[in-house]
Length: 432
Ligand code: LLP
Image 1 (cartoon, rainbow, N blue to C red):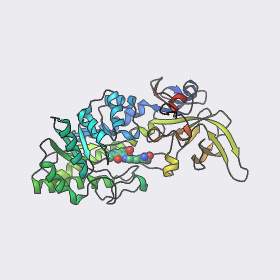
Image 2: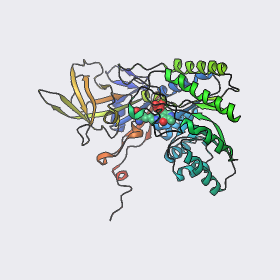
Image 3: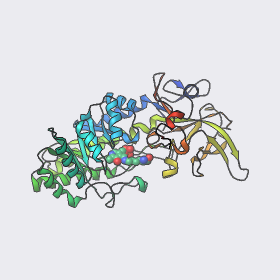
Image 4: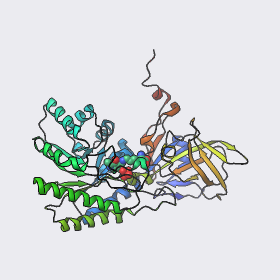
């Protein structure tokens, strides 16, 4: 749950990456995102162990979880590929110096401008989500008079249920994502008529924050069964299969996620045995697209506690200098989080607080019942597991400035995202 380098130091403060977080809060201000690079690298290594069993595997980090230049640099060093879903993510990745060849471009409604940008950068692969997208890809390619081969994969709606929050379950038949299975052969026929588009394979993503690994075996089987059917009927071989992302992680003690090494090695073994069983004519490249599980546990958010409001017959609010704008997951999904008082790590947790944000919504509560030591104005609250879908989903609600982010590694801190300034807040305003 906590970053792997977390420790309590001799002053009773939380330490991450060899640094006292109270010193980080003093130096960079709060609210502050802190990412432990050792945890990120260790998760990437765990995913990479799949190659010991199935070397033809690509780990493509789903960068919607956290898209910033410095993270692309670190994961590029670890040999990962990348999913992007917008020109903004692609632009950030290119800014980090990552090769566009390592990019899979997802999205259920890529705009013409995004397709044009990605085509002109010669990205590795378009994950086509929809039949219209193929036609738009064609029109734009021809208008730009390009010459290179465009590789695509097709996202299909697998009609597989994964047990997770409705908003983040994406594999159902009525999902807005993907091509229906019955439309697939028609799409394959159509693509065959386009000389510069090559369909590399098929893709499925069933949802996010999934604890049960069985649906992923079903995904592997579904992708291979469909690929074999295409080969039998059309003599076209699907060379890649992508099983998407979605493995769950531990936000609180109640969560029981699978171990990543067991999960990926299990997938590889299942793939190998199913390939044999159905006698598939080649070894496809297997693509995994983890987002959350690569980065969530590396991240914590530091806040300063300000006002405390005690309602005698009910609860005590501890109000922090952030909230739903830097972490919209509690108000959006009812997501649960854990916290500590980072300057009182050895003190007894004998009080229960409701950790509320400073934004103008009653629902802006980060944690409903948090057992903590007695809090005083100025204490530093640390909320764990905020590395994924926090900054990436953050907003400027109430025109509040987005926090800074620091990477910590081996006793060094590096500011990777500056805190927004007041002039940033009005940078796009135009006076009448
Ligand atoms: N691949 C595709 C095609 C996806 O749509 C996603 C996530 C992933 C991979 C990565 O899934 P992960 O490994 O991160 O579960 N905002 C929500 C999560 C939305 C996930 C959207 N798609 C949350 O905060 O829980």
